[in-house]
Amino acid sequence: MTEPKTKVLLSREEIAQKVKHLAGEVSRDYSGKTPLLICVLKGAVVFLSDLMRFLDIPVEIDFMAVSSYGKSTHTSGVVRILKDLEGSIEGKDVIIIEDIVDTGLTLDYLRENLLSRNPRSLKIAALLDKPERRKVQIEPDYRGFYIPDEFVVGYGLDFNEKYRNLPHISVLLEFE
Ligand code: 5GP
Image (cartoon, rainbow, N blue to C red; front, side):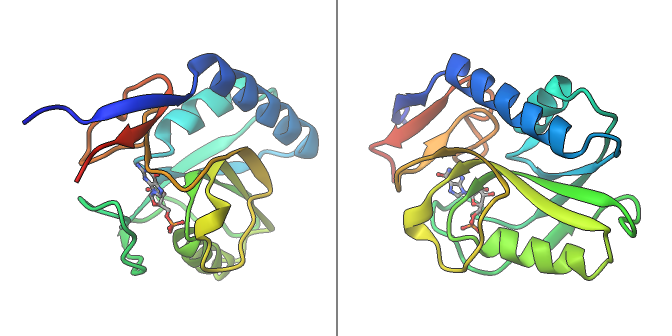
C-alpha cells in the first residue's frame, strides 16, 4: 500500500508560538489558582504536554478517553466514555484540553458530562477549530487556530492511529 500524501498546514514553529501564547492567557486567567487540565485522549496528548510546560501556575492533570472517529474520517455522532477520570472534579477549576473541535458533538457531550460532576468552573482549550462543520453551538474559551474543512494529522492527531508523532500539522491528501 502506498502512503497517502500530506501537505503541511501548520509548522512546528507556528504551533509552538501559538501554544505559548495560549499558555500565557491561561496563566493570567488562572493566577492564584490550580486548574485541573483534563486531556482528551489520545489526540490532545501532545498539545497538553507542550501547553503545560509553558504555564507558570501550578496545575493538576487527568485523562479521559472518548470514542471518536475510529478508523473512519467521519463522525458517528455517538460519544462513549472509553476511559474515565481518576479523580473527582468537584469544586475544581477544570479546563478541557482538546485537539480539535469539528462538529462539536464530542465537546458538547464532555461539557455536559463534566458539568454534572460539579466543578467550580469549566473552560475549554482547543488547538484547532473547524467552524464549517459545527452541528452544535459550542465555542472553545481558548482557541489555537481556525482551519478549513480538511482532514488533518500530526501533533497528536491520527489517521488509523498513524501520524500522531509528526511535529507539524498536515492535511491528508488522496486517502480513502
Ligand atoms: P467532533 O465531535 O467535534 O466532530 O470531533 C472531535 C474529534 O474528532 C476530535 O477530538 C478528533 O479526535 C476527531 N477529528 C475531527 N476532525 C479531525 C481531523 O481533521 N483529523 C483527525 N485526525 N481527527 C479529527
